[in-house]
Every structure is written in C-alpha cells, then in structure tokens.
Length: 427
Ligand code: FES
Ligand code: FE
Image 1 (cartoon, rainbow, N blue to C red):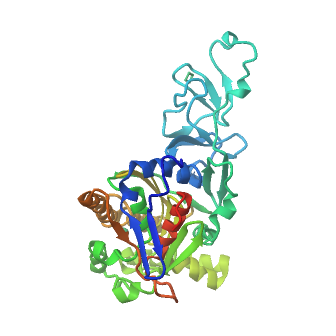
Image 2: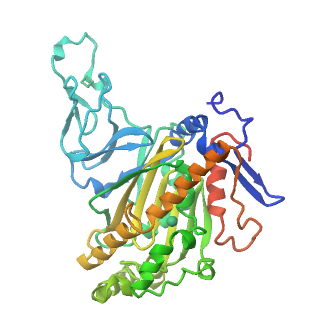
C-alpha cells in the first residue's frame, strides 16, 4: 500500500493560519488513489451491510455488494443475522444468484456444493471422491472479520484490528437513536423496494454533498418552488434561515448537519402539501412519541432534521422521509448507489403515502432533487478534466468562525481529515 500511494503526494492541505482548506482534484481522478482507498478505507472501516428488518424471518436473505464484495445477508435458523461472502469455497462461483428470498441452503450452480444459510458446507456430489483428510467443516463460506449491529443497522469489517462497532460509531449513535426511536412500539423497518443507480462522479463527491447545505438553494430551487406551490411556507429556504443549521464532528470522520425541520415530516410535523386528510394521523404520531419519550425528546425526534454521514459511505438523511444511502466506486469517476426508505412499521397508510411521495419526489433518482444533485456532482467530475485532475478544491468556508461553527464546510473538513489520516497523509 505504501508503494501504491507514495506520501510525497499531498492530497489535503489543512492550513489553519491563513484559513484555507484545500483538497487536491487528483484525489477524485486518480486510479492510484482509488486502489489505495479500497485497501485503507473500505477494507479497514466498519461498512454498512443492511437493516435487520430486511430479513425478518429465519431463512430470509438478500444478496448485495458491501465494499465491492459480493455478500449474502442472511438470517439463520436461530434468528441471528449473518454476513457470508458469496463465493464458493470450491472454485469461487457465487453460491447464490438471486437478489433475495428465503431458503435454508445455497447450492452453487457450478458443481453443486451446498451450504447452509449459516455458511457451513453441507453436502456435495461424490463426497467419497475427495482425498482422505478433506473435512467439510474446513470449507464453509468465508465471512468478514466481524459483524455487529446498532439499533437494527448491521455493519461488517474486514479489518482484524478494527475497534468495536460501538466505539467506531462514536457520537453518531446519538443520531441513530433519534432515527430508531421514531417508532416506539413497532420499530423502524425498511420499506419494500430499493433505489439503485450509478453516477459518473467520484464517490467522495457524494460523501461531501450529502451534508452540504450551501448548494441547497441554488440546486434545489425546482423542488422548493413545487412545495411552495402546494401551499407550504418553507421556513429554512432562504439564506438567512438556512444559516441556523449547524454542523458537528461526531468522531472517526462521521459528521452531521442539523436544523429545525422546515419540511413536513410524517412522524410529527404536518404541512399543507401533505393534504388536509393526513393532519390527524400526523398529530396522533406526535402524541405517541410524547407518550413514549416525554415532551422534550419527542420534540427532538420529531422536528430535528439531520443529514448524517457515517464514514466512509453510509448516509442517513432524516428529513422529510428517512433514507439510508450507501455507495461504492467502480472507477475514480463512477460509483454505484443504493438507497432505502426507513419507516415506522406500524405507520398508517396515509402517512406512508406522504412518506413514499417524499422518498420518490425529493430523494429518489427520478425525483425533483436527487437528479439535480447528481448533475452537480457529474459536472464537477467533468470539470476536473479541464486541468487533467490538477488543481485544488476549496473547502474553507466558515473556517474562521469560532462559535458556533454553523452552516459552513466543517462537515466536509471532518470527512477529509479522517480520509487523509487513513490514507497516510500528514495534513
Ligand atoms: Fe461452487 Fe464448484 S465452484 S461447486
Ligand atoms: Fe442536494
């Protein structure tokens, strides 16, 4: 790794004196950087796998990529969530070629080796044909070094030296709690369906953008205009209001920007664009929160908007709906994105309709906002070609504001400092 990312190359300049924070554009365009990231970032950190609610019953599974590796996220007979590498211990084929389902065994289609949903090799054709000393128990499916979960969010790491998940998540736990506590009785669950799309831009552009408030007014004008046309007075959509948002460093590269929700939120804050008929439902949800958590915490859960990045590639947008979004690079200028909507599993149908509309119309790849974000990020990536990846991006906004560190680029600097540290930099 040292060989492929020589540290004479400087990617991040963190110059406190003259208040400048710069990121080299080559960090977004270089193959060498991407190779080093796979090793030092994605194979080192805890990486999000999925939510427990996606596989509620024993035998349930989903197949997906985690940090670029094909995995099976399964629930075994005892009801425990497992993460298995989807690669046959015989000659490497994927043992499962379906995206989801419920089955006790995975049978590899190449030579029919058969594995339990715990990953043990159960049987294969011509068992007697193998040499003496061949033991089935030595040929189970490989697993990540560790798998753990917090409030239903399941993570895996491929790094034997990684700290425990609870320590890794640091202050991000506070915001995962605010998300999980939205459904005091039934719990939160991922709703059916996944958004999957790709973008012609570097993955770190999405990490930056996910909690960047600076772009919202110019880029999301269409969405804001549509909401206003439905009768919403969107506080928080003027420069002055948005300055009330705050950015926080949550430790280990995790960041969040928070503000009082300007949008309607189906768990508690009703807005005219949701339709008069949903008013009662939304107000009832709020009373339920108050009963379970007390007025102070209910207010926080219901009305605090936040966009959180759990380093390196998990985003929780807790805004007009709750979205779980994760992404992984296939090339310096290309990434695949997956996103899910998270909702109280006992949500009444009219509130769910409002939530789904928000998930699709703001946060979805065919909505009024996400395509605009994507165009901005792809435009940056195209722009980097102008100087062949030379030059520097400026991330210094708000650096000389001591108190409070609000509505600036603190969240991005937090991400970049951690990234640089893992990549062996000295900034
Ligand atoms: Fe799976 Fe041969 S590769 S059985
Ligand atoms: Fe945006």
